[in-house]
Amino acid sequence: MQTNNKPATRVVMIGDFPRDVDSIGGGVESVMVYLCERLATRPEIELHVVTLDRWGMGSRVVQNAGYTASYVAQSGMRGPLKSRQNESRLLARVNELQPDLVHAQIAGQYAVAAHRSGKPHILTLHGVRYLEANLRTRLLDRLYRNRVVAREEYKSIRNARYIISINPFIDECFSGLLQGQVRHIENPVADKWFDVEDGGNESAILYAGRITSRKDILTLLKAFRIVQTECPEATLRIAGAPDNPDPTGYFDKMKSYVSAHGLTESVRFLGNLSESALLAEYANNAVFVLAAVLETAPMSIAQAQAAGRLVVATDAGGCRHMIRNGESGVIVPIGDHEALGTALIQRIKDQPGTILMRRKAREDALTRYRADVIAQRTADFYDEVLAAS
Image 1: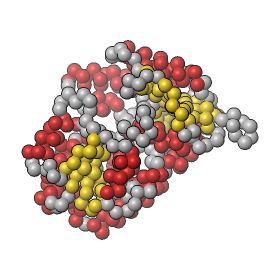
Image 2 (image 1 turned 120 degrees about the vertical axis):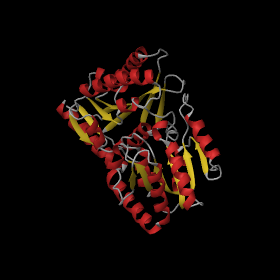
Image 3 (image 1 turned 90 degrees about the vertical axis):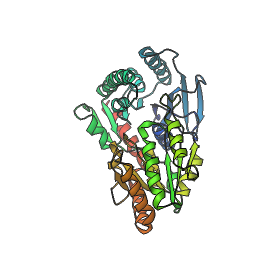
Image 4 (image 1 turned 135 degrees about the vertical axis):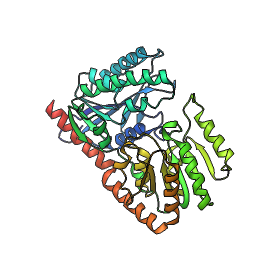
């Protein structure tokens, strides 16, 4: 309760949430954890999370610091029936919590459940799922996913009167479709990332994220091979795990490339890391690299900037809106391993210039991604939506 005896606003945030807040598995999970941590400290908000259990642990409720997380058992069905049943299960839990407002993170079944609740709801668009579907390797899977995902995504957007866009790339991709009220609020980064000390091995390069063809890590490995010709002391550390299942054997291709080109001593595969272990990696590596072919607003870039690391990334989606090319980081063409390798070599060799870029990156992060600022802007939007409703 607030000091004026007005009941707190009950907010249900619905989306992908980790099974443990120190074992974050993706960008949306990071956003939800960081945002919930700050919103939960606000006395005017009573916060609850609803998420699908993706680990086979079943339905349960977990008490986190200042908020609950309800895990809903996934349907065992396949195809569209699975989504419909998941939506109904999510909706049932949302209705049990009797929220004043529902905040859905990413279009799809979470957004459908939020809309079906009949409560005022906000949709945060984190990805462009119809473009992601186009990157699937198998033709029939790609055609099916594109059709189903696009229909689901468009429907979620049409049903949302209030939308949060995290990056101008969202507006570019859905131009003409965003007919509700759109608020531009970037993703939050927890304070711990801003506390990473300056330093790090100047020739140590880090990648953190999923190991999948969309991240184009094979291009990164080819670029790193070029780096080693000029900077033999350079190392590349890859944090993350492959998709499971991995039908194309992408991870095996990566390991084969490393072995075939004599990179086993300088390339390390770290697997999935807890957030505390990942923070230690950022502290020890001066350069962060992302060679992806499609991104929206990568949390890894925001975290790297907050930690004061030099970011070299491809011109994939929203990356260009996060990095001031040549000032706070470097943008290179997608799929161009020579340009990527050259950029990494330049940044390793030009330490005064790299240090300046790192400082500018952290300054940008301080003004754009601080979690308390993002939480304040989000809470203000909640108030506006409820007042209008």
